[in-house]
Length: 179
Image 1 (cartoon, one colour):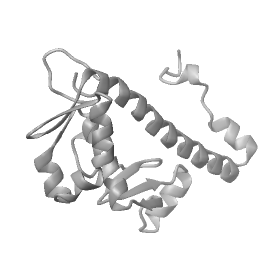
Image 2 (cartoon, helix red, strand yellow):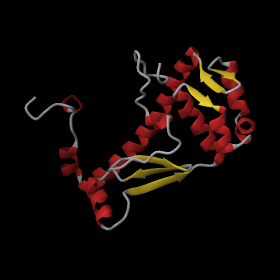
Image 3 (cartoon, one colour):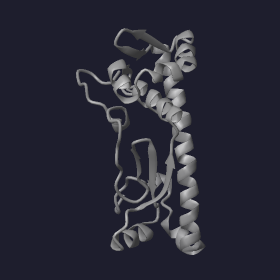
Image 4 (cartoon, helix red, strand yellow):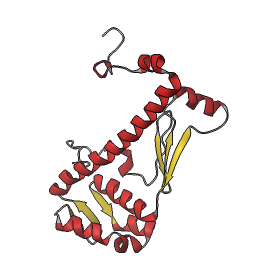
């Protein structure tokens, strides 16, 4: 395993950027970024995105500042999705308060058999990998709900006739013009 849901033979590559970086920046319409505890979202409207850039603005139209406990939980979720969370990394980021603040979560995960702890950090167990896939699924469902809200906003912006033209049937995604 290279993450809770990715497996490969012989390579240590991972397809999830969120597990290897404390911060990440997404570019383009509909992108998400996470920087220093703030989650940013750019507009999903290509027209609005271009207009904002032309005016010297960013494409960011939404942000959510996370409280410290939320940041810790987010880091726990995404780091362990990458199979392991190192104590040195946690302590450099949060000091000793991480383990005190998330003691109930860490204890619960140990009792469930989801994580194993050693002197250097926490690792997902095989049972934990299953549970993490379920948690990440719920996480991505909430992201999808947000995306759907943004898409509805675009439909309002374009009007019903234009919005219908912008929808691509699922079966046609990834097919060339002649397919």
